[in-house]
Image (cartoon, rainbow, N blue to C red; front, side, top):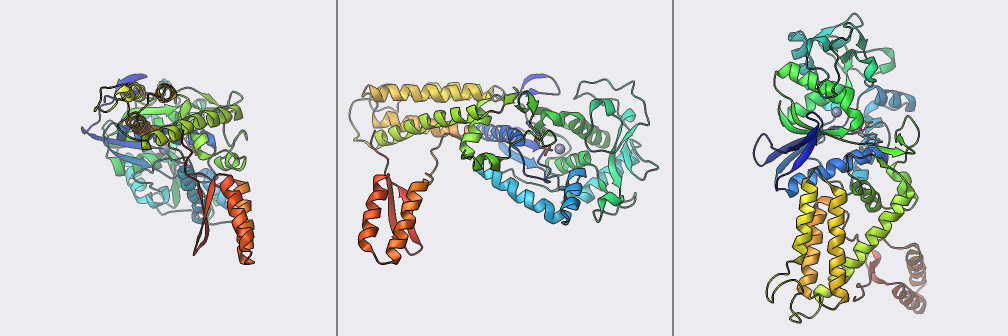
Amino acid sequence: MQLKFYNSLARRVEPFEPLVPGKAGLYTCGPTVYNFAHIGNFRAYVFEDVLHRTLEYAGYALTHVMNLTDVDDKTIRGSRAAGVPLRDYTQTYKDAFFEDLRTLSVEPATVYPAATDHIPEMIALISRLVEKGVAYRAADGCVYFSVAKFPDYGRLAHLDFSGMRSGVRISNDEYAKDAVGDFALWKAWDEADGPVKWDSPWGPGRPGWHIECSAMSMKYLGESFDLHTGGIDNLFPHHENEIAQAEAATGRPFVRCWMHCAHLRVDGEKMSKSLGNFYTLRDLLAKGWTGREIRYVLVAGHYRQPLNFAFDALAAARTALSRIDEFTVRMEALAKGPAGQAPSAGSPEGQAPSWPNRHLEAFDAAISDDLNTPLALAAVFSLVNEGNRLAQDGRATPADAAAALAALARMDRVLAVLARPAAEVPADVRALADARAAARKAKDWAASDRIRDEIAALGWTVKDTKEGQRLAPAAAPRA
Ligand code: AMP
Ligand code: ZN
């Protein structure tokens, strides 16, 4: 399976050719853990998850590194405002982040290095840059990268900075293109940093945001590696600066392929904390949407197209997923059915049905072509439609149903939205179960049995165990 990706550096779709055959190294800029991530952030993490899963689907042995930015301007500001030590403050949001990733079925990265655990690596990298004369300590005590000393600066953003005034310095982690200048690698401690500081050859202070990613990516993936991703807002200055820091230090090409996802928008504007137009994952769960439905919305759009967030899209995801679930239930029932009936609709007797393969091939072609998830989902639905048609006509054998389910499971290795989730207990069933527990406590066995029947009428079974009642959905009805 030949994968092709749009490389922001080359500005075109290119075949993916890893440095080491059969292996892939991927670095994704992770969260700044100063708050709950919003679903705009999760657009980036879900896109990266589709990439992660596609690389594994295509057979690559993947090393995936995602950093946690647990020291920067925002985390320090947040911890000081909350009056909580930085480490405790960021831990809350690290925990929340991992919980949210599980909710969205995001496959874990190989390693999640935290910036505060890698200060020596950052100091070593800055020292190399100072020794090479591309970085300097200024009168304010900070160490800056001298953009004029790195002629390739602007190559990723496709900007020409050659006429730039030298000596302009910028110490904020985030800035716009027109504020470009020498950027901070090491920030001298000042009062606003409170107790947050580390010793360095340049005095007490802390690393800048950009150096974190150069140091941690090279530590885990080597000085040159295959893929580096983020949201499009990371392209400049963050990724431009990462390239400058790494390549100026090593003299080697840093990353072969840069991939960026377009923004999740609200009414035409980027969803962001600063604009206040955001929903966290938790906000949406509280409104009754599931992680699976939210993931569906995020994977249904192509990652390089801006995606407008709307509740209509969540409602449409719910409808689409219930169609897939109905199909799954139907095929599961058929697959269990009596074997040895009519031959498979799509293939000669005795052979595995081949018709699902057509849809699998369409799926593979779509996903390998720069992660075309909308087309990949179209292949899912063409499989569903064909399977439903066969079932409707009474021509689907157990082998057809089993092959359709296998194809669906294969597609789901990449999409991770198709599998029917273990059913959640609806509120009315939960209320009946509580009433039954009370009845049993009162030794009112007649009421207990009656309520059991009421629960069964709602499609659930209840078992009494040492730990209390266990609820499970009744066996799926036969199609
Ligand atoms: P941050 O925590 O702000 O560093 O962002 C974490 C990741 O989310 C980065 O890859 C950003 O580029 C990405 N991101 C932030 N806002 C959005 C958005 N509205 N749509 C897509 N990606 C975003
Ligand atoms: Zn980064």
